[in-house]
View: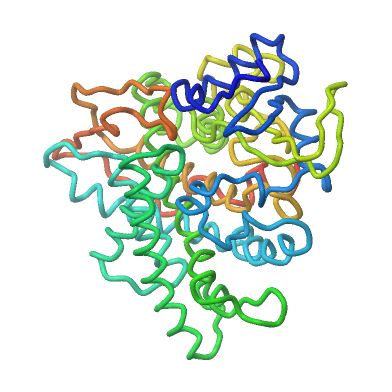
Length: 425
């Protein structure tokens, strides 16, 4: 098994590849080869702790070039390690983990209400596409990027393309590369204009004037990092589509959110992130000879943390393939247990600092959707695990009757300060 390169199997099996490989090997660490390189697949709370232990792994040599060029951008924080990573990461933790998150969630709720007014009595809309545009409008306002509506639509389309094309080779990759080039050019010009003005407290200005070592970032790199705020925020549209799928499959959950149960809405948000497929696995490269659970990991070996497998591990989750938000009620979430966006402390490690934004936005938009009278016409709602990133096949088409439920609330359903996924739980 260790001699057989598994790159084609990853492309064919998607999220199921590493869990199946580990299962056939007895559930422990499994040796394999990916992209012609030796690799070890690991899973579990102890595996996540090992993966995120400082000094064990480096990221910049483990990321495939296409992933960098499509998803993250060349020169992005994801490609850095050590002190350089910590300096750049401070930019994101200062912006994405403060009280401004509730303001962003409130903006997203307002944009959802405005969009729902347009849907009322009209033809079916694709919730995934609409959600991407809703979030793009909200986050561009929040960041302070001056965009006209057509530019917001282009931003949503391009950020979706970047996420949709990172794990494949073909037309989706071509679209992702073109989308990144277009947005980096547009945002580089905006960055240059902002630098000609005195700094302000807007996220746009903070990114534009950020320096790692006394020198401001190259305008293109600054644009890359600005996209690393905009892109993953817009990618919450994937989870909104999954939330709609869950409400359609198990309507009782929608009823509980309609009743105004904040604790249940937060639990529902976490269960969507656990249950549905988004990141298949994370990778790093061993910086020195290591051992995990008795398995030698020579320096230079790729280490793959099985995210999808861990979020469905029966040792961590009772009946893991059952969608059950109640599992998160009154439960403290360990920072190495629920890892759809990485593990550990986001302030010091590689866990996504935008996770609290994801939780706040998804909670707010899930509640809005639950309170909106709508139905799903006949369509293909299946979610294939072979496609990365996965998505319901028809992107969730929904219809809003003419006399829809009025949504009076404008406050976010989930305050960022209530989320147990923060600096280290």
